[in-house]
Image 1 (cartoon, rainbow, N blue to C red):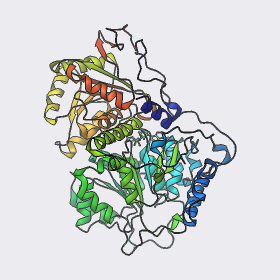
Image 2 (image 1 turned 180 degrees about the vertical axis):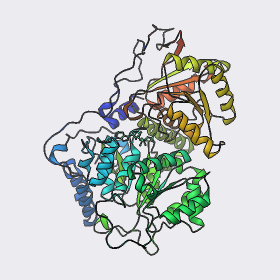
Image 3 (image 1 turned 180 degrees about the horizontal axis):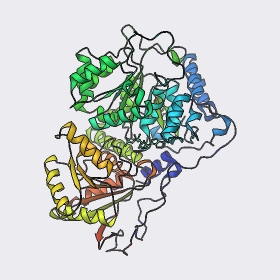
Image 4 (image 1 turned 120 degrees about the horizontal axis):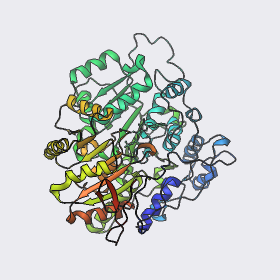
Length: 560
Ligand SMILES: Nc1ncnc2c1ncn2[C@@H]1O[C@H](COP(=O)(O)OP(=O)(O)OP(=O)(O)O)[C@@H](O)[C@H]1O
């Protein structure tokens, strides 16, 4: 456990809380200041991979590798004034074959203009009030602009969407620096980027983000291809608008592609957002089709990356998630070319990360144990560091009452309550409304219109408690969400982490409260251990949050 905690602290840098699992004997009830983007140090001299030890690692390898390194190296050169001293990352030897990690952030940019984005795009960002990149954006944008295949891993709500959208938008019309040469009229524009997301909601959210940056005049350059919407209308829009970017769910993209209405062989970018979810069995057939067709020009040599990466003939593959288990790393290696692992404060070749997992373990039990360890490490890295986690024991028939008291005690304005079974959502909504809380259900059995109307109302603040299932656990961005409640326990630490990540977005405050029955407490303890984060027990009494000390009956009552 301490190893897990310290690993997380080292990976995520100084913005992490300095507590550990061992309990301090005092009540934890106050909001603490929440660090957004941490302060960034500066030092002298340009920081390159060579200066970080990459060169010597690779010097012994052949010329081919050397030239790849030079390309990689130039991707990381940053101006003198943007340099931070390098620290050892402290990652356990067992997890690294070699140690070319760049732990201290060389990409802690102060503004988007430092990252090599075109002026037009900078102006759009400015107009939207986006001026300072997050750490993961500082790492990812220059790396993607250098045409590397990447896996982007950073905790929930840290800005991964713009981390991949901005370098793509800066290389496609209409925002790229140099407009297409020659007379484009009458020439069929090709789809340049395909972005895949596991749910309609997430797909639509990404579309809105692209539209926001394209502006009203150019918003037709992005087309949604999500399931549940009218397919022939989507096909017509593809034909009429000739978008440069499509965003959709695997089923719908594969369906339209198989019907011959989506031409993506010449596509330059393939993004798989929430890639670990997209790897699940449910999406297997559709994902196979997408991976086989997008950016796969007939006759193109998949290994034709000799010379400059800029002249690649194959698509650039970008995989994204807060949770990146080894299965994703393995997939990245087979789908991409020399992929890099991009995190908030480090960029490393994926090949430097040991992929020895269950396949190398001895026996099925060792294999299971190893899988579970990798899972929990993935979950640890995905949790925003400043969230506060509690659990509250109650009887099943009192769960909704406990939820009501929790909402009032924390004065939460925008709450997402997770349950495991769709059938129970309606009943919970009914009970919450009967107790005076404006609530609504959100799940996959609702029609597309019902789902989007409910989400809109939740975003507008017309609904205070959104009662939902796993559908909303991934990617949903409602920045105002200040409380996540587990009315049913999540299946594992990864699911816990994604649910929890709906609050505390981009450095905001956030509470995660698990309401469970006594026999389920051991599961919470196990989650606590796996996540390396304290989850103390609490109760809600007289409009206040009361946190229990470990080993003590009950502690002081505190107001927040
Ligand atoms: N540089 C920035 N400045 C201000 N706000 C930003 C910036 N980058 C992203 N945001 C906002 O931060 C929020 C979270 O971003 P985003 O949804 O991309 O996070 P994420 O890391 O993809 O989360 P998840 O893992 O849950 O999908 C969004 O509301 C987004 O608009």
